[in-house]
Structure formats: structure tokens, C-alpha cells
Image (cartoon, rainbow over all chains, first blue to last red; front, side, top):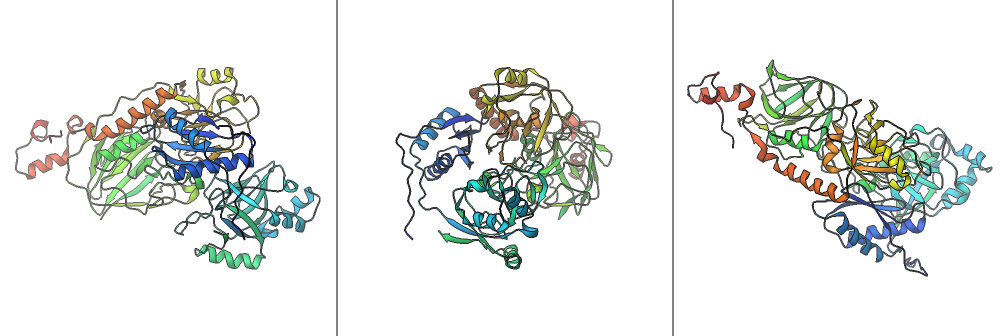
Length: 252
Length: 344
């Protein structure tokens, strides 16, 4: 397979991001106010440029759907000086897909692993099999990781599967839950509250202490899902518990 | 091997240090002490590095017993009545528990969190470079949860160094300073003014993730759902009910409510110490002022070793007395000048 290189061609130069103060030790570099795939690619591109050409004083960066949160040490650099350098970096941060890693993540859909699958099918006036087929056919990207360790928010959910979140969020949903909410789908690592619709579970731990790597996915990684049965889930879950990655790295 | 055994402890008490920044891009919150200056002061008192792991003690009382040898502790943060086996102990000073002695700490007075640092530090297995407890993520050492009675914190035997006290800047009730943003444009000017002009109280339902504020309803211009973006310590989110939530060290790394303002670095610990129900106000400052204050705060943290003093103001120093007697000097328990230890 040929290396994927796709530049987003623009008729006009990219508009500069907005620099929003998040206190005296962080700047939010905002590319859009809405969930927007093009903006998310620019967020990830700026993150890569900062990683390749570090700016003294930056302590860490946190990519999200529409903005990059840049933590810095105000003893080392001021808001104004850092803002100027971030705008210069953003101007040369071209969104590309060069070198994107792609993971295939096994999912046991429906039944006890995906208690909302049948209701989702009813709401969307189709069958559970159709929902699974569409979810598995998707080509997703990690837009951001947040909320709790390893909770990966994916962009690329097809419009047919867009659904408002539950009116009553659940206080506890299982580790490894694969769910849909709004226009997003997600891979949840730890058990915790969620207002999304639960389609299935993966044995993959996107975060596991004492494993190398501790965090499996990076913002920007490409993701596809593959359906497995409950028996395979049980086997792979034991392997993952013991430290196996289980997810398949399709392209490095 | 000495250890400090938790004989009794209230909720909201855990081992904390400088936290584990660096993995927020993976959803891992930094955690760490609510009030860094007090953590650093407690550690400095016993010769530890400023942000070493110590016990963060919530508003209720606690008792600790030394086993296997003497344990020296440094106490800072919210002051409390304190004694070791009936011997009064002052806050912002060090003290030593002999084997079998118990340190009794009362309720926090004028604050929420006290810090008990242990000379030589607490033994544990760092996770992402930190012992700080983050119960939701199952992180922290020696226990990945708040402390309970019976827990044991292992350390090395107390040294024979003299006890110290530390001179800290006087406490202040000044308003908590904020800079507006990142989403203050989601609020009309009159609501930003209402935020600044009103008295606020911290709700009793607050925790290490967030402090819920009670006061007037702050209205959004255009709904309360925004696309999630990154958060910092001190982010002031306004959810749909208009009652702000200030995000604390165990916050989610991203949040989907508009953030009207952010508490400045220099005031964050002071804000964390405000007791539930006690009225306070916010004050807006410019970014230049906030950054100048952050630099001053950093300098204050660095100056802590220079602020150490001898213990002479706090009555009898039993250990110094005993050391002096052992050395064969004539000392008088009522004339401190005969046994005081000179400290630069």
C-alpha cells in the first residue's frame, strides 16, 4: 500500500488561530468553536510542530477537538512572547496525514457487552446487525483523549449513526466500552460515568500501568474496529489483563 | 525502619506531592497538593525537597503514632490544635515523635488543608514520577486511595537535627485574583460584572476535582454546551445552572462548559484553603499583573529555606534540652538561652 500523503489544499492561506488566556500559565490556541475535522487536523499539526521545534518554557500540550492547550512556565516566557511564537508555528503547521498510525481494535458488540445496541437500532429504525456493520465500516481518527486516562474521542462517525446523548447519563459504564454520542464515537478505558450509547466492549486497554507503552493511542492515530464474539473477547481480555496489547497495529 | 501509623483520620486526606503533569494529553489529570506553598513549607521544615510527598489532611482531626523509631514531622497549612502526647506543638514548625508517641491534630482552623511532611520522605512506588493519590485512576502510593486508620507510612528514623520553624507571609483575606478567559466572550458584560461584584461561598459538596460556588446565577449568552477543550487548575466553568465550578488538581483534563475566568497561580493555594460556607470575592487582574505575581510566587517558594528559624519562640524544646544535658552542659528549663540551638 502506498504511503498516504494528503495535503489539505486551500484556496486562501489558513486563518490564524485565536489565542485565549487560560490563566497565567496556559494558552488555549483555538482553531474553531465547533467540532470540525479540518480544525482538529490543524490542532494536531501545531502539536507536531511544537514537538519538532520546541519553544523554551512550554511544559506540555493537550490537543482537543478544536484547540491546543499549551501549558507553560510564566517564569520562563510571557503570554505575549509565547503567543507570538505559537502564531508563527501555527502558520507553518500544515495538516497532513503523513506517518499516521492505524490501529485495528476488536469489539464484542451487543448483548451484555453493548446493552444499548438494540435500542439504538430501534431508534434508528434498523437492525442491530446493520448498526454493527456500519460502525465496523467506519474510518476513524483519535481527535482527542480526555476526561479520564485513555478515554479516546474519535471523529469520523457516519451521519447515519449520529444520535443525541442519553437524557440520564449512567453513573457507571464498564471498562473498554465502545459507544456513540452526538456525532462522535469513543473508546473508554476505565469504568466510569457516561451519557453515551453503549454498543460493545473491547478487551484493549488504551491505558495500562506497568505496560510499555502505558498509553496505547495518540491523538491523530487512525482507528478501525473489527467485530469479535464473546468467547474471543474473554480470551483476549485475559491476555490484555496480563499486559498484551491485543489491538493490531495495521500501519506503523 | 520507622513508620508513622494512621491512628485516626477524616475524609479528604491523602498522600500528595507536586503531582504528575506531562500526561494530560492522554487524559491523566496531574493531581498534587491543593496548596503548594504549604506543602513546600512543611517539607522545608524537615529538610525535604519542596514538593516531596506529604500527608494532605482534610478539615477534620487526625492522629498518628510513631512505630519502630522516632519520626520527625513538619506541619504547615491550615493551623490546628496539635500536641504530641500532651506536649503542645506549633504549626509552621517541626516536631519529633519518639517511638510510641502519638501526634494529635484537631479540626482545621482558618483553612481546609494541613500538610504533614515526614523527614526523609514517605516510602512508595512513584507512578509517572509521583506518589500523589488519584483515587479515580487507581494511582498513588503507598495507597492508591485516601488514607484510612491503620495505614502505615514508612520512613527512616528521625535525625538529631534541631527543630525548626518557618516564617511565612501573613495570611490575607484579600479577594481571589483571576484573569478572564478563555471563554469570557460567552458571557455578557453585565454578567461578568455580576461575577466580580458578588460575594461567593464554596459549597460543602466540593472536593479535589472541583469547588462548587454558591452565589448569583451567571447567565450564558448562547447556551452552556461548548465543544470540550482543555482545563487547568483554577479554570472557572459555568454549567447550565449558572453556579460556577472551580476546577481543582483532580479535575478532568477536558471540559465542556464555558470557562469565564481562571484563578491566578499565585492565589490558587489560598483559594483551595477557603473553608466551605465562608464568603469571599474575586478580583480581575491583567495578564501582566498575573504573570508578575506568578514570578513572585515562584521566588517565594524558592526562598523557603531562607525562612527557617530556630524554635525558641515556642517554649521548651525537649530534644534540645536533652541533647544539651547529654553533652554535660548546665542547662535550665526556664532559661531558654542555656539550651537554645542557634539557627542561621
